[in-house]
Image (cartoon, rainbow over all chains, first blue to last red; front, side, top):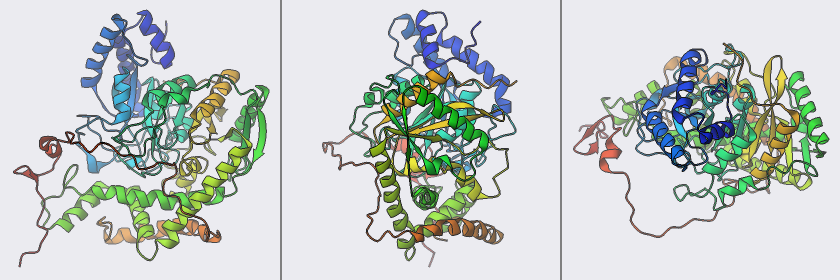
Length: 487
Length: 85
């Protein structure tokens, strides 16, 4: 008997087309699993039966008519930062409690058009600020592999949902590693596209020059499929590229024979990397070499400055974006305060959590007159240096490989008192955001009983190269994204 | 004050301690000579995309006000923005 909650998209789609299961069966299996497990994992903030009932009916009608799209009948989960018309969307924050968007964002719309059905909204760090999902304004999410540990973040609910068998795929957003790091910590595939590949229309913005939407899946093929459906130009996002979305699939099944893969020495020996993580990466490098890839040593000399540049640029953009939460047009409001300034103050005091306050203070400071040159402008110049590091590395190789996270999943509460230690979780991923690169994390084994992720980064618009390396690794290693074997 | 966060008196100390350790880390940027380096604001090359200047439907007034904490006569209601004289 096949467990319908452990399938890849590809396998589920095959069963649906054969008629051996219906979309309604898939939904029922997932809802039952969620009812059984989500009280331990807490991946979801809310559920959307009003959507899945209608969507499953329509999917089954299309399947019977032989009119199915690539994702028809496939249940997905959506991070709480992506607007879906009429579905409460709060960015993990109390300040947006009750907010029901008047429109659906482009990425989700395209998935709906391709037939995907929505199970619910997943938990995340408030406004996607964090690396553990403990900054959620509602509750923390737990790692399905060990419920005393974090799932990573900020898209921790989406990663945990896929790892726990509560959705076949999920959407996240990645500003400094918020898809790749939780994917690594939960043992699933997570992909961040090139900046501009997927429209950000309908994404509640954190740092607009860094944010991208991407998928969590159980296989590289599934990630490629979901990305190809979401990708492509959208007039509603002026930064979305004119390139065709379909190019992400070009030749990605070709294997790594003859490819040159760079191992950045600053990433390989990054401070704080756990021996078990390093051993898994060594093993992955060996697998890729055995498949015919040439492994070359490369350098990203400004790696040590990446975190500092990121923690000026991201908070600066964050403080601007979050200025709109003023209690006037939507969300929490103290509209009966004696004057407008007091209304702003009371709304934001009640609505924002500690990490939001930290970032807004940091960003406002970095942008304030007198400090702008020393902080914001300086960070933007260092961003240029980091981008150049990657440009130079890609002259010597087709893609670079490293660990996704220096550590496996850490215990809940371990880093909440020390913001800088939490920020360091993203030291291997945020360079990809600063340089606008596509990146993926694929499971590459276990350390101390917990999943380890292999990160592949490619040049801008090189999603097909990144997918090609990841797929070759997945096929040759036999390491698959598994549904966590708990409960 | 600039960010209108409405901090309580005790909070200021708590945050200033945490923020100083972050700023201390950030200060390492000053070690780099960036005199001749151009800043990056937009990491992927895009030219200004233009569209035909034709009217399109936008949000209806009803949709725009649907989430309003307080609305009067089809407008958002806010507290007084001027002191009474």
